[in-house]
Image (tube, rainbow, N blue to C red; front, top):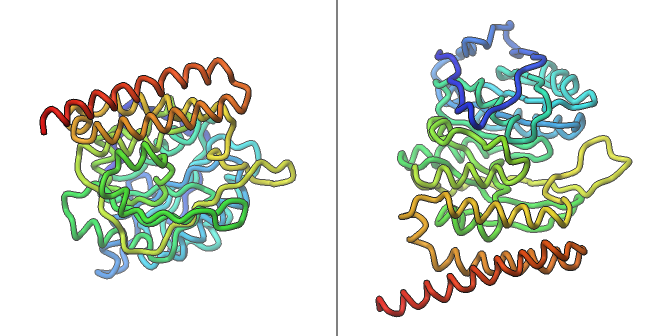
Length: 347
């Protein structure tokens, strides 16, 4: 098989500090050249799929994520766990679990801490070109047993699609919180991400070539990097909705007694500014035809998003940022009126 192709260096990742490699239950074989044992014609589909699991300080939760991969009806060809410079036994815990349970090729690599985007890029850098499908599972989330099989079937049915997306079940502090039917995302990824956020990478199976062409994840972004990748993929082709069961997205509040790190999606009030500002930058980076085709919707959503952001910042005591958010809201409302005026004139 082919050697892994390097990512765009501007997106980047940290260098590897440590690596564990394994294959169970067959005799160990080197993975540096992408070699994975063959097991007959029935294994042809699995050879296409690689999975990357970024993790930081989650020695217990990462095992749950890996167990959901091992339960897939369509096993992946290889799983790459990237330990993002954890300060605990996370890498050892992942490696131990894989040695005892995995029936697929795997690696556990450790890099210097660089954030989720850098960790995903480091793992993606090890994905061989022969693996034409790739998925990214966060270390605290779970796939249903049919996730890879249903998503691969959806992509096979639509050769021009860049990714398949499954429904999302959000579980907050152990209790069901929200259920999202992702056919809405597949209809218009841009408007969906602007309105609901981009925390759905773990619900997607991507064509490896499309992710590589997009340059991977933006490592300079410590949050919102998943939305950036989705926006970068939109010009390449559509997404399709997978008929599989919902992916379970776990969100955990900070708990001093917990062994595992809390969810980044439950962060500080100030992050509301960061996320909304990133949305503005994502819109500015869209190809003009993509932006023009949905500009009225973009204006309405962003006016509401900045209104929501202003309220949270004000309630959190960030008065200066709340005033700036108010100005951004006014700009988007003005753009919305102008867009409505042009639409009326054209009618």
